[in-house]
Amino acid sequence: MEQQTSRPLGCKACASGEALGFDFTMAFQPIVNIRTKTVFAQEALARGLNNESAFHVFQHVNDNNRYRFDQTCRVKAIKLAAQLNIQQDSFLSINFLPNAVYKPELCIRTTLNAAEEFAFPKEKIIFEFTENEQITDSQHLESIIRHYQQQGFLTATDDFGSGFNGLNQLADLTTDITKIDMVLVRDIDKDEKRQIIVRNLVNLFRDLRMIVVAEGVETQAEYHTLRDMGIELFQGFYFAKPSFESLASVCWE
Image 1 (cartoon, helix red, strand yellow):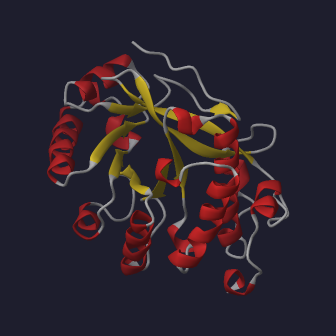
Image 2 (tube, rainbow, N blue to C red; image 1 turned 60 degrees about the vertical axis):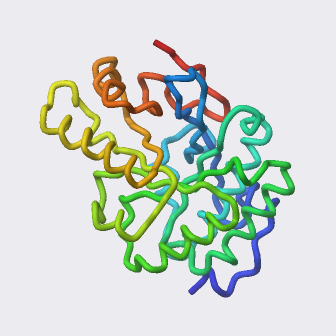
């Protein structure tokens, strides 16, 4: 495979996009704690250089450059987060592609090097993997999560409820955080079935000692319904949209 034979990636090469042949940047969207009225984390989201969508960026990603793209995302997110002093107040959440990580102990080196170079504390980094990427080797993903946690990183399951793996994944993977996907959040105030599902998921995650985040929250009614279930961490347009190469102002109720 291409990623197994390429030279190691340096932080400067990743930050400039040199390793990929195309360049991109990041926007940040906050995850807020409504109890303390603080920003728990800022999620780094890929954007084109002119603020094109993540979809536009991912059109350039293929099997041959997936590994390099994953590594470049990490470096760009850490570099820009350090410039914005995110670590002073909150965590930095970075999405990673499980199918791009072939050996976690090797793939994490670029992240550690970037954290050192840009003076960003590694204990303030969260790695999210999405359920929307089909996992062909669950044991491999387990080893990635375990290794990242051993290195001092927090881990998160993104988009829970929308992807391929579902509840059986919880029996094998123990991330620190689980983010309930917007497919379960949307119009939850009007949908009794969704309310029952999410209420029981919240209790399940707490029993598993996982931190719960509701993502994709867009309306006050959705927020109030989820808040009344005991959820404290939220992400979505109701609070703030992603902010291009900057930190958004949070709209507190």
